Length: 265
Image (tube, rainbow, N blue to C red; front, side, top):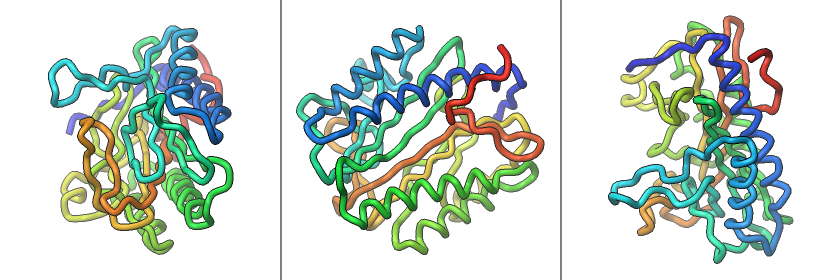
């Protein structure tokens, strides 16, 4: 792994991108209601990115099909869609759905990544619990991040919280380093098995990570749809996803996508 530690100035530049991500996702969330299409929500995000002279790094992200990058500025995933849902005018939100909004802006050469899952109107208690547990799992990770800890210690706590509540952690997709580009080293799993332990790492001040538990109500197995992007649960049970971009500090964690202003630029 080639983990690049960031300077104080670089972290502030990332915080500027993180504040933009936060502000846009708040505006996206305000549109979430029955009858709204996921394309409408994406179009609002794209307008805000243009105003800020930023770009959404999802747009045109390459796939295995040459010349067919991701077609939208954000990923919007509904119900059984775990990640990488494609916004569409045909995908209309309905009462009782849950929807994940995921945005990664780049501004002035630095980027940040954040996601939230929201209920559409009133949802079943089990779906609300799924949302709450996924958010809580991210919060547990943030509370325990400290220099000199191994990431596997954090991942074990995350996995335990999910599974004790009767849910499952997706294994095929994990968090990641972030900063100058959307995906940097290291991989940041939300679970512990022999494979992630081999790629384990020690938290150091200056590391910038996208921490993002992806939790499903049923079995953890997922599949890719024919569009080449949208990942759904095989058993069609709902999924939730929360994400923050963070910097490891000398005393713990600095959340860069919580809406605070940069200290200095």
